Length: 195
Image 1 (cartoon, one colour):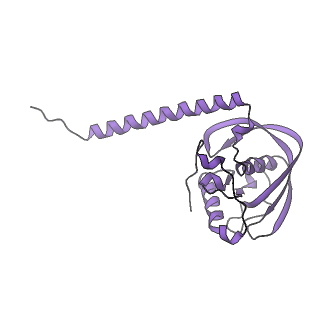
Image 2: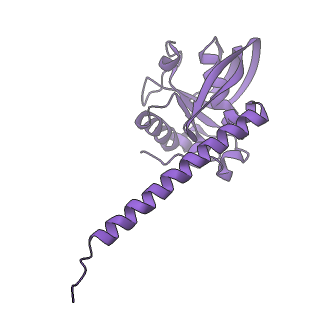
Image 3: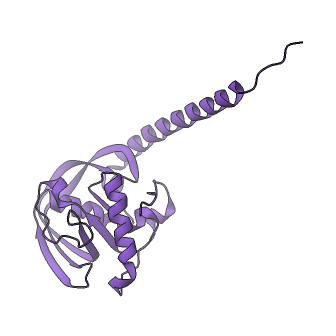
């Protein structure tokens, strides 16, 4: 089922996230994450982004030009990662990132070239994967959500503040435009009586 994605600065995006004890309890959550990510054509999505503070992410390796090493039974395009721990190694690579919780913003972030990720699969198996660039960067981005971090928190503070201000101004303009359109539509329906 499609769920609304929370946008920054929603507090749920910054809260701590609970580990999963029983994967059977979160099968609906997994489906909702995959459905939402699919509809919005995202590269990945974390549970806190749909308001559920649990340690679960989904990611679509194909977006990063990689074959899926652990296809989901629900949708084989996606990989489901529960309770992940990451060990990042290799050179730092600077690249542009975007996020469904910060729509229409992209910024330069440094990520490690290689990631060893240990996680539980949707069927409850303990797994490990060595992910190379650029999938490693995508995994680091999604798993950051489980630590209450968005990509802007990995950026230089001044650059992040500039991006956020630009985004806020754009949102304010859109809201003003919508209010004007709404007022115009309401006023348009009422005919004036002539005396």
